[in-house]
Length: 217
Ligand SMILES: Cc1cc2nc3c(=O)[nH]c(=O)nc-3n(C[C@H](O)[C@H](O)[C@H](O)COP(=O)(O)OP(=O)(O)OC[C@H]3O[C@@H](n4cnc5c(N)ncnc54)[C@H](O)[C@@H]3O)c2cc1C
Image (tube, rainbow, N blue to C red; front, side):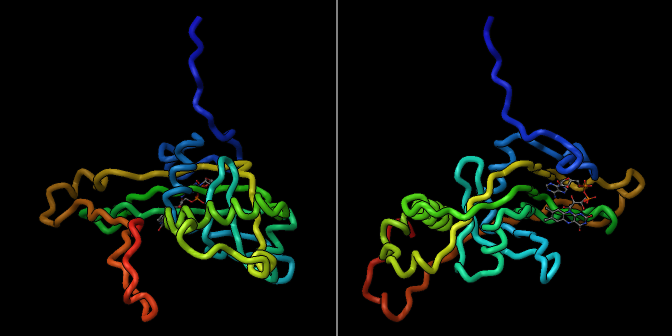
């Protein structure tokens, strides 16, 4: 009999089940990973013994089912993440402003993900270099091959944390506003203003006036 491949999913439990507008929740690896890969940054939330709860924006990359972060070895956040303490990371992309007839029904079209897991320091040197390349490639493909490679001093000053995604959910809203039936005929513009993150024309610094723009830019 032909085997039907089941989609890979994060287990749905009390921690990651989307309750508010549950129909927008998704648990497939593909849905969660798509948001993580699209988001330029993630907000890392930790419960630090000295400072208590704090959420800090960070660059990230994804390597299979792991999130990669880098930072100064002296960074409180990196030390906390590297200690294996539990943390939560959230990602969001705004795809549109949703303008309803009523203010109550104004919303956003978005793709978001909330991820739970524990980090660990990466100590193996080739792995650390791979992780840094992954972060560089996510930011700007082609830049890693072009720029000067990290030297021993820079590598020593840099901590890398790898966090296995243990539990996660995505939440996605798309489409027009959902107005109440009694408001539909009101003479007020309603609809969606699409949004996206976009890079703009590069600006050379004073040391690069005579250097051609690389192809990847
Ligand atoms: C750009 C953006 C703007 C938003 N603005 C607002 C706002 O102004 N007001 C508002 O009420 N809500 C807003 N939301 C939705 C918000 O993220 C929450 O989903 C919502 O507030 C419900 O919160 P809750 O704690 O009741 O969630 P619950 O459904 O009780 O959360 C249970 C679990 O579901 C998962 N979950 C919840 N929210 C998300 C999410 N967004 N993405 C992935 N997993 C999730 C988490 O694992 C969480 O532990 C916004 C979302 C985005 C992406």
